[in-house]
Amino acid sequence: MSPTNIAKKITVDYNRLEAPYRDRATEVSLGIHIISIFSISEQTMDYSISMYFRQAWRDPRLSFPPYRAPGTSGDPKKQIRMQDESWNIIWVPDTYFRNEKRAAKFHDVTVANRMLTVNCTGHVWYVTRITVTLSCPMTLHKYPLDTQNCPMQFESFGHETKTMYYNWLPQPIDFYEGVRVPQFNLVKTIMVDCSANYTAGIFPCAEIRFVIQRDIRYFLIQVFVPSSLIVIMSWVSFWINIDGAPARVSLGITTALTTTTQSVSINELLPRVSYIKAIDVWMIVCLIFVFCSLVEYAFVNVAARTGVRIRTVDVGRVPLVSYDSTIDLNTESASQSVFINCWLYVKERMTTRSYPSVVDVEASRLKARKIDKLARKIFPVSFLIFNIVYWLGYSIPTEKFQMDL
Picture (cartoon, rainbow, N blue to C red):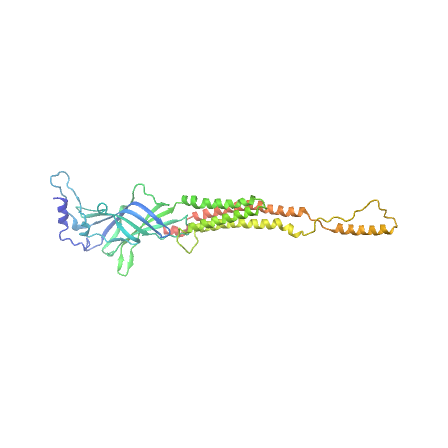
């Protein structure tokens, strides 16, 4: 007897609307063979996956005795491959993806990418190639140092747990050789039961949870290193001369605008969430450092001009008369007495005058230079401390995430 005849025989008087068992629930074993995972999007919070979806169950109505094909010898065959569209004439699980965002695509090139086989004991093996986009709710508090759980939920649409239930194949998840998750590293996979109690009853559900960790190398090159260099560049103003106001101000404004532009471009790729992300903390602190570098020059400039503002005195006073040693102070001449009195008056006035002090101006500039020298140490040390706290703080897994795992 040929496989075609066997397939026709076992489907005679077969009712595809009835489950394989009437007295107990049918066990449906699930498994997937992943071809590729792509298009993981933080903005839309979903991911796309292409895979072979495997389902296995036992239907006693499809059992048959082992057979030999006409004109052949050897051990009898115990398995047949059903013809195309045979999945429309026998009972198959009504499995769908509960967290599906866009309709699953069944591949039909060059033929329908489906295979259904039955062995002599009635065990059915049903494989379908599917590409589907699934929802992946993300928590971006630690972005881009985050780890996400992306679920894949299989649920029966019309059968309750009293009719069928899900289990996993011995090896439920296989990966095609060379599969890579873009911008992520696959940490592990977790299988959980997600059966839900609806108004119509309890429907079986099985979930695969992909635990993926974001690859930080891309962000180191594109975000962290450039922003750090911009912050360091803003410190160059501490070595520029105090009188170089145009150079120092333009450097501060340029670095501030560059940091702001970089922050805006990063957030354009992310959803608008109501909480602060790790990347926001980094960019805000970098902007604060750049802004403080600009403010530091304002203090330096004011400190350098403080002495000049306080000492507002006349410059260039010289005595109109000078003492002549040849004058005889003991003379009784009236003209000499008048001259002496004038000279003493002028001398007294000149000795009480304050001359502009160059030392006071230099002291103010020295104070300004000390501020610059202090900033050369405080800014790098503060940025280094921030980096240590930042990377340690965001690298430690939170208690909530560990509970989710």
